[in-house]
Image (cartoon, rainbow, N blue to C red):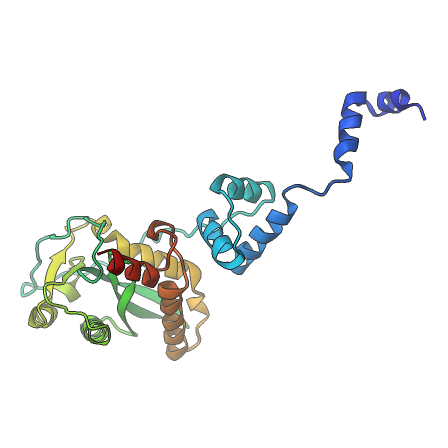
Length: 279
């Protein structure tokens, strides 16, 4: 067989042909790694980014891959993460004259190393079965752990009061004191109401509030809401009880089984225990 004639007919160089022969029988060098990444990617329904994939490869497969390699393979095989869209709408409610605001004590100092000292709280809405439900959440800024929450089909004041009651239960169950704990919120009418202010004062919690129109002042809680809405199929709920179970299961997963890059690749509960050990 005349190799020169074949190469000329195919319009390739002889050196290129011989180089191709060296690799023709070898499997695609990234394929095995791609299969591992694809398994994690599919488990997250296309919503896991490269950081989550890196952490889960190590936790679930005991496989360590660099950020550069994971990004390259995802790009090569077209694994595109579905990025959640920011919700441009936020409910704004006028405060009555009897409501009052508090100083912004937190002042965006989100880097905290002592668990259960600085907490933040907010409310978000969830659309299901042609109506809204409202979720009130309290988050520990140091560990990222969700320490209390409540869900209702209304926006009445007992929604946030129930969250505070559940926070008291969490503190009692974990032998923690609420004295001088700082609880940060926005200036929503729930948090400026006399009933709310009186309740948290009665249990010695200090109150802090974002400046008006500055949602970034409470960004840790907004970040949690974004992940929840991106990762939970809450719109598929048919009943309020079904929605409540979904939220309960997700918060348990978020606290105990969802590692976070900024928490040294630990889950919030793992990071809380880590902080308590080094304190």
